[in-house]
Amino acid sequence: MSESSSAASRPASSKKGRGSGKSALSRHTAVGPWVIDCLNLARRPGLGKSYQRMAPATDGFSFDVIGVPEGAEVELDVLLSSVVEGVLVTGTASAPLTGECSRCLDDIEDQVQVELTELYAYPDSATEASTDEDEVCRLVDDLIDLEPLVRDAILLALPQAPLCSEDCPGLCVDCGQKWAELDPDHRHETIDPRWAALMKRVGGSAELSEEN
Ligand SMILES: [Zn+2]
Ligand SMILES: [Zn+2]
Figure 1 (cartoon, rainbow, N blue to C red):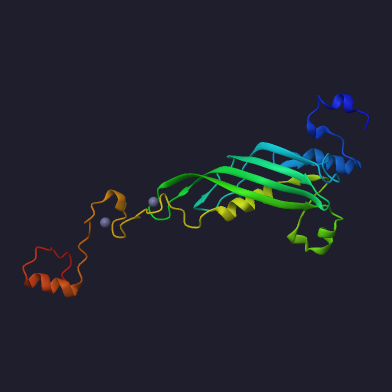
Figure 2: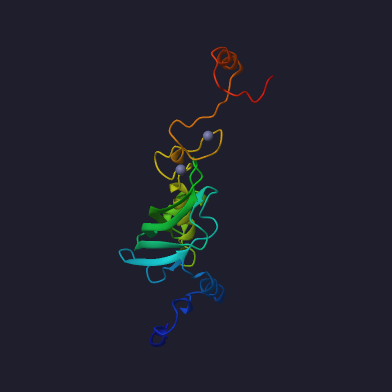
């Protein structure tokens, strides 16, 4: 590469790939906020580089009840360390959450932060050779795509039954109003036929809506 004098003024994605035209093309199209180019890091154990960046969440970052809204900014703070087997990614990702309380159905706004630790193995490394295809991340063209890693970590961290507060009392099962806004002795006169007869006898004022 003899074009270093002009490289500074070019966007990073226009850096020349090492190999064929095909590889260079995939590098061009792949680089984005989620993808980190490790060309200067790969195969140089001991080197490390930290990255702080924002990347937009795709629609895969949430479940029905809670998640990171599509397009919301995920804050990445990661360190990429070149090791013998590949590139080790450590750090954190944090993002805003929106959802619905599973008890009272109120909107929830929250924040999620996850720890990341993942080795992206070189295609020809011992790690790669000794593990199943699904079990190890790979460096492809010296690029690391953080999106699947961060997405899975966030999905794992999401509560299955999100709550607006730890002790949310939920809704009255009869009228659907929030217990938080109801009188403590709020109740509905649901009258068991056995009680109805008794109440009639004691002259209770309960009105029976149904005679049978
Ligand atoms: Zn609630
Ligand atoms: Zn009620």
